[in-house]
Each structure stands twice: as structure tokens, then as C-alpha cells.
Length: 159
Image 1 (cartoon, helix red, strand yellow):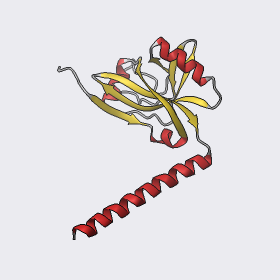
Image 2 (tube, rainbow, N blue to C red; image 1 turned 30 degrees about the horizontal axis):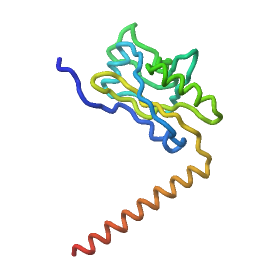
Image 3 (cartoon, rainbow, N blue to C red; image 1 turned 45 degrees about the vertical axis):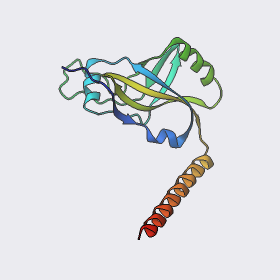
Image 4 (cartoon, rainbow, N blue to C red; image 1 turned 180 degrees about the horizontal axis):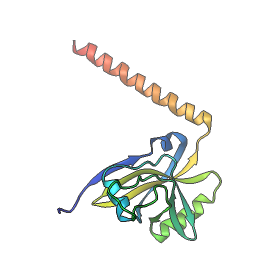
């Protein structure tokens, strides 16, 4: 079998960018079982309720749903088990200091294969207040309306 190259997106957490201010992102490897990798290769996973936690100098990913592999036997994995994240010691030490600040948390943004290895992009994030979410939505709508107006003006200019 040929070695994989490039990046193949499996799952994305779009709600995280809506609910949190993203301060910094990190790429981490995942410790997975064989059936988890096979299930991910089928493109099945959900990051919706996922979060990362630092415990005893190690990083752990919680509540990420990787469904059981359909052809798996008794060796199949639990769908929402906690999975170890592979980060450099310096990154973990830095994150320990940052997450102890009030309101900071670690959320997964993307799950993907990079050169055949499963990776997760985690973000150091700070929760948004309701008015921040409304402000973000308003800016997004304003930007969309401005683009629509510009494209309509371009169309009129061409004719």
C-alpha cells in the first residue's frame, strides 16, 4: 500500500469558533486503538462535546465521539473513551500555566489525518459571553451583505 501524504479532514468543530475566542492553536497526535483508526478512515467522528484536559503532566481528550467500527469484533473500542494527546513537554507546561487562568479551556477544532497519522488541532480558548456571540454574528452578516453589494455592483458594471 502506498504511503499517504497530505492532509485529510475527518471532523471539524464549527461551534467552537462561535462559542470561544481562540487564543492559540496546537497540533497534537492521538493514541488510538486499531478499530478507532479504521472508523476514522471511514470519516466518522464528532467533536461537538469534546474538550481537552491536563492531568498529571499529560494531556487527555474527553467526549470525542468515534463510533464503533462496524466490522470490529470483541476488540472494538468504547465510542467516547478518553484518549491521550501527544504533545511536547514544553507545550504541555505552557498549557498548564495558561489553563489555570480563569475562563481558559482547551477545545478540539479539527480531527484529521496528516501523512497517514491521526492528528487533532486543539485550541486554547476563552469562553464568549452572549453579547460577544451576537457581535460576531452581526459582523459576519455585515461582511456577507457588503460582499453581496460589491458583487452586484460588479455585475451591473459589466453589463
